Length: 103
Image 1 (cartoon, one colour):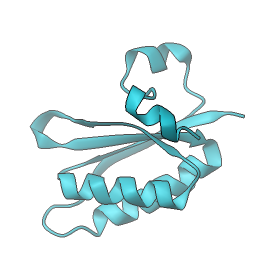
Image 2 (cartoon, rainbow, N blue to C red):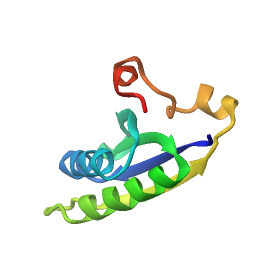
Image 3 (tube, rainbow, N blue to C red):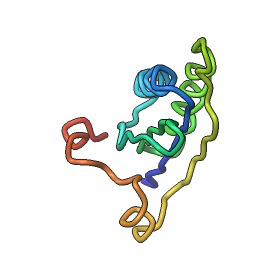
């Protein structure tokens, strides 16, 4: 089964929190990683089956954009079946804290 990665970058922490919560509730996905990017932006990545990641990312975007006070999704992407080299180098692989929740 192809496993995809989906990433949402937001301007504020409340927006990334709302996005993360909406994503895990909307699809059979696992939060793989959360990090702060430059300029105070936040990003969260999810992993799961391609269709589930697509559905979850749509819910996350809607939730992030519904947050008041600059709570908007800045960018997002879905990569179906990323290459193992990409997983090893970029921050999209599962972190140790996510393993108990892995789908």
